[in-house]
Amino acid sequence: MKTAVMGAIALTGAGALALAANAQDRMILPGANWATMQDETEGGHRFGNPEAKVKLVEFMSYTCSLCATFARQGDSAIRLAYVPTGRISYEIRHLIRDPVDLTAALLTHCGEPQKFAGNHEAIMYRYEDWMAKVQKSTQAQRSRWQFGSHSARFQAIASDLDFYDIMQGRGYTRSQIDACLSDEAKAQAMAEQSAADIAKYGLPGTPSFVLDGELLEGTHNWPALEKRLSSVMIAD
Image 1 (tube, rainbow, N blue to C red):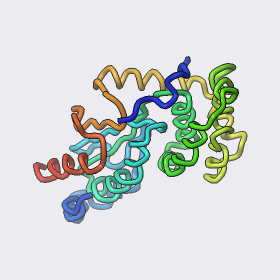
Image 2 (spheres, rainbow, N blue to C red):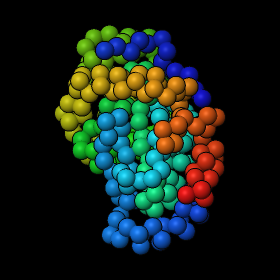
Image 3 (spheres, rainbow, N blue to C red):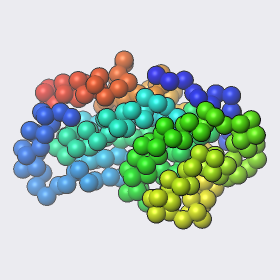
């Protein structure tokens, strides 16, 4: 697991088994299209059947390289092979580590809840590009990220890391993006929810996974998580 990239900046303010079970579950739940169902929860965004027997929660950070890898390997596998069965729901929550992380999280929440999946993928799939800019950032840039109003800092980060380009590619206007970055209440709520989740589950870092309310120890990548999910499907 990765430690915080921006630690010096203070934060203020799937398997074949699942696919084979799909047809049976659709007979049990006629007409349900769990693959496309998404809703916003108190702590994040959930995909699939809200009444699913098995509930998986991922705690991730946008400045975490292992999270970016999981987004490419695990997200689609879970949503294509497990979520459609209706037996497993998948929720993504944020563990806020630094101002860059918080800026990205605000942008993924921009617009209606149904836009989250696309926003999340757009940010994560460009991880190497914008993280390279973080690593090459100057002292002057980091000062802009740390001082001033919340909106000014988040806008500076978005500008320096090309987040505006990413979101405009998603169809957002600059004014819409600025409005999302200026939502101080949302930023504060995210930071508080992150702290509460860390305290509740004893999260050691990112990505971490909670299955049916229990933290999966030693599970921080897709191969390890896939084994746990496969076991659950067999037991179920």
